[in-house]
Length: 167
Length: 103
Image (cartoon, rainbow over all chains, first blue to last red; front, side, top):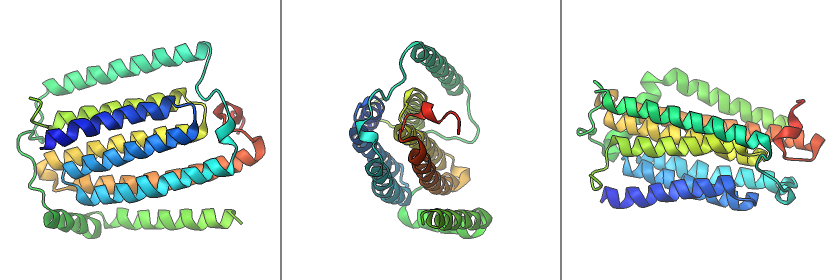
């Protein structure tokens, strides 16, 4: 069952991510990116992180595209051409990207041969909604309370700063 | 093999999504596209964190919590980036990233 959902979702994520990058129209790129974020939410759901999936859908499928659509509407981005680098610089970038890809593949190839001590590929954690909510609330309000408060201050600062500068 | 989805399937998916995001960040000239590509990379990292949160039993869902923090960071980063882009756009009237090299 998991495989039936995973492979189509992974295909959708990767194909629409490529469409986003190589699309010539910025609005199409934005719509394709929504599909990628939606697919990522589905991946979270398959992994058992239902709360993460809901947060992913509300922020990345609703809030972020609206923010970016507003940015597109308020500017004249839609009519601009030549959105991908050209000339000799393009080939230099492709070579650099190829080198980075090869280094990532090398790292993954090494990682597969290493026997990890903390990862149990055949023994996944017992995930259910009650345990997950229990662990998340426990983490937010005990183990990571400082980080949680810092993020609250960060969000408040951003809201105050942007609304103050928007006058 | 294909019917059993394990940790490496998720990690490889996240790796490819991260690489696509990295590629988009490097080759795009449009600021909006670069921001979307950065969000792809953040999403790939989130998939990694969630996967490790599931497969590392001793972490007790810490990966899920880190992923939530990371989503908050991504939203904040995007809001500030869009604001900075709009402030710059008012001066340059273009979304070409190469025009902003003197900022």
